[in-house]
Length: 182
Image (tube, rainbow, N blue to C red; front, side, top):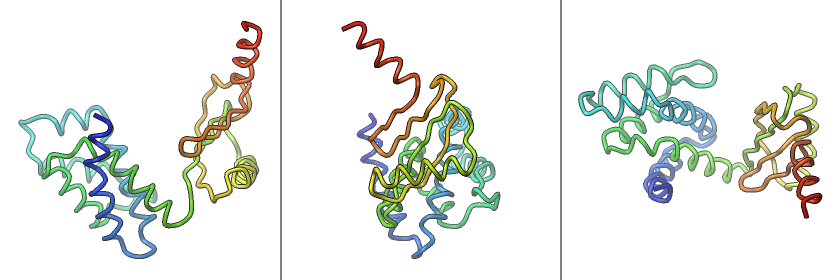
């Protein structure tokens, strides 16, 4: 199923990349990401899957709820994508379209998405320190996003694509547990 969704999403992401104006792809990726977040909501999925609700209503609800990171309304390119996805019965693929489009934008700009998972909130200086170290480690520019996961106890886990660097206390405890059990 996941491979099927990825296959469905690829042409939409590639077409969106071709249609986006030079330098505007990153802003469009943020808009598509906001749409994908709303589309991933259980209530929104239920509305979209309801045969009694017409495509126009799904479009209106989705575009009125999703906003750009700055709070501005969505642009025409994002709205056109939503209309095409809904009209073609591909609403469920919207989160994957956003993921693939973000990957294309990242490849074009030489940047990778990174998630810092921390047991505690990080301030800007701490994020900058982690970013600097991780950019040297992964040899690429990183766009960092922070998530708080108290179960890590301490330390951080950094995820860049399919690579994970886990320096959390929880990971160290698991390593010690495995060593003692062996």
